[in-house]
Image (cartoon, rainbow, N blue to C red; front, side):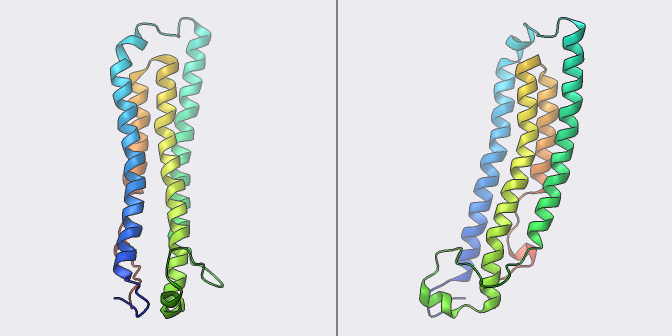
Length: 181
């Protein structure tokens, strides 16, 4: 649907989805990069393990358990944040979050303005959820470089992948949002 001001709501929906999908894909691809680097270095790092005494083994064990708990907490927090963002509505005057010509902005209903304002908040909460999921992969990457454990790298990347699959972007229409009347 296009207004006299020249706003095509379907194009806006498509652009918003493409931005979300691009951000999600870039962060998800970095997990593959971590795994590739780990695979290439796995023989070199495991040949020189840092864990050579009881104190280092205890440090490794405690750090691993702590990071696993933190990664699980991040997944839970990402879900909570994303859920809050999906239910948010803009209150008061709708912000001009997208480049919409003045004439077209005046043609929008208040409901459409509020929806556009809520989409900016939703994108922000999705990026935070994806960053929290990404953190689990980074924890595994750090453990891999500190202790040479390729299995830990894969475990933490797996946790991050779960977060990315759970919180992948969906089209606005699949979320029950329509800009057009």
